Image 1 (cartoon, rainbow, N blue to C red):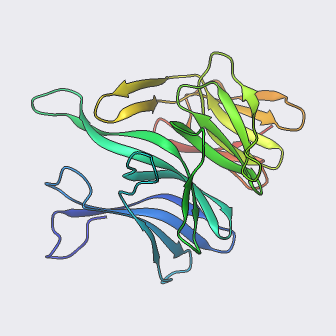
Image 2 (image 1 turned 180 degrees about the vertical axis):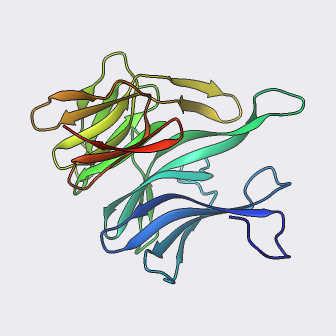
Length: 257
């Protein structure tokens, strides 16, 4: 959005990474950027409401740091873990030149770890073993499923006990974009994806699309869905029966087997 104000003619607002709670609250990231700036002049984690005209509450200003860890200047993959707790990926973002001069820049993002954020206290906690996480979802109360950059496995972590197990290994295919509902897990595997290091940012994963796979968590059975397109950006319905996915800039609704 470009604010219609004589005070901000060169400013754009962005609202990204939304996550809606069952009670109608929505957590999202708000950024405000000036055209001549090298980066965002304002970057905030915000709690709002799906009700029109509802008030918003600032949860965190970025960048921030956690004890002994590097700086986080971005947030993505927001999920609700409980009514008082959200989980997200803490990122480091930087502008990278593809060629130059002039510089054909793009924003590269490195996932530096998964963060638990308690809304009532503002406490933030880095989840061990999640450096370079590529996606995360909540499978049941207190349990998350996640993937790591360049890795072929889906991990399950019980947050209360800290026990980590592997629920799926795609062999030679990199997995990402995990979504879960009930006993069903969907993910992307293989396709056009690469994991490499950029000196100014760190290790990043660039994803141009992959194959959708559906895993039955109870039986371990895996089903491949529609080989005709490279898919990205998965969103699974709460009943696990339907999936929204993006391909070549279009959104599709898929009925799962």
